[in-house]
Image 1 (spheres, rainbow over the protein chains, first blue to last red):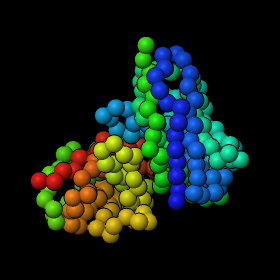
Image 2 (cartoon, rainbow over the protein chains, first blue to last red):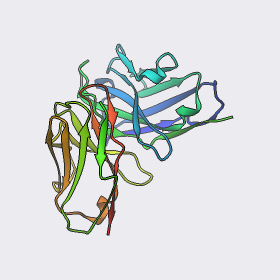
Image 3 (cartoon, chains in turn cyan, brown):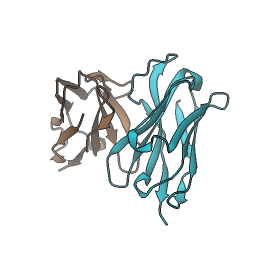
Length: 124
Length: 105
């Protein structure tokens, strides 16, 4: 059974940093692209970043470019999101998701499995 | 591409055939998915590539459409289908619709 479990969320002041982790199990993590998607309170969903199966390619939405870094450790089956210079508008639940294209740099760009999410609140 | 979902709130009876709409500001070329999000849970993939049913999803869910106009249909509404439904396009950029909240009458 595919499982994705996020951790690392919490309350952080504007301008500070936070690192999210996502522990994956139930599938061969190193074969799949992965992504982070967020949802602000009572708002819709927003793609944040994607990384290829081997970490060689990364993609970001414009509003987080230069501030957020997506990375992965395939030996640990773990996905990360390093968030710097956080803003109030980054407040959201952050979901770890899987791109279903396996074993290829060709991502399909939708998400077949999601973790339960971790809440990030940016506030002074 | 911006996505507009309608209606924003839909109330229907158990057993009803329900249709949810998603319209793109540009051609989506069938790169459209539907997600179901129940209260307090993560979204779940229902449909991808307009009309492909994700493994494990009941066959009462189906998707259709082309160009800018897409539809999610539930053939016979069940109580467990109460949720918010989001469409999502991955043809040009990556964007989600604002959602349709589905309730039981």
